[in-house]
Image (cartoon, rainbow, N blue to C red):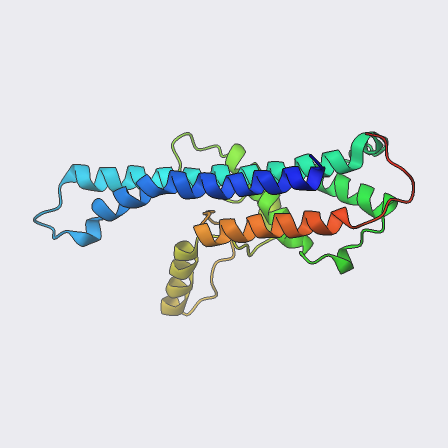
Amino acid sequence: MGSLAALKNQLAFIRSFYLTASTPFEGLLRKHNPLNASSEDLQPYEEERWQEAQKGFEVLGQCSLSLVSKAIQDYLREVAGSGINHFRKKAKESWFDRYCCFLEENTSFRWVDSPVARDLLEQINLCRNDFQHDPEIDGSQPQKDLRHFEKHPQSRFDDPLEQAVKLAFAKVTGEEPRNTPGSLTVTRVELFKAISDAGTFCEYVETQTFSKPQQS
């Protein structure tokens, strides 16, 4: 099986995995949603069950997006072969930066021609890093680290509810919204966009010609 076919199989699996694993969490969220019960009927365990289901839903999204990041990395590793060994990793350079430099120097690949913006792919990888290195032992929504925030103050994986609260608070106080690192969340819509972007990007890479044959 070729590298691109393997990538597409993996992305299809991630999508199927998410859809299958999300079903019980969605059911629990509907069943135990505190907003669906009056204050008299609301039992403490109901809210606890809802919080547990919400945490499970968040973790599922994080795991799925991390798998998308890994799929991109695995594909680029296969494409580069042993040629990547000649590119020493620079300080503060990510694996994605390294592979992009390799492609630009060894193939006809150019970001200006890419159907997917570099920022969108970087956000996938930086979110994966934040998920893996979250310092909170019991947190369900990791925050952007400073490096991620400096590169992408606005991200499609920013928690929309948290952003809405910031804007509403700023409107009430008459102040500018606080531009600080916030929480990350992976919705179904944004996960599926990320899966699509990963596939489209790698399809583009597949069409680029090498300046010289690569060794596997």
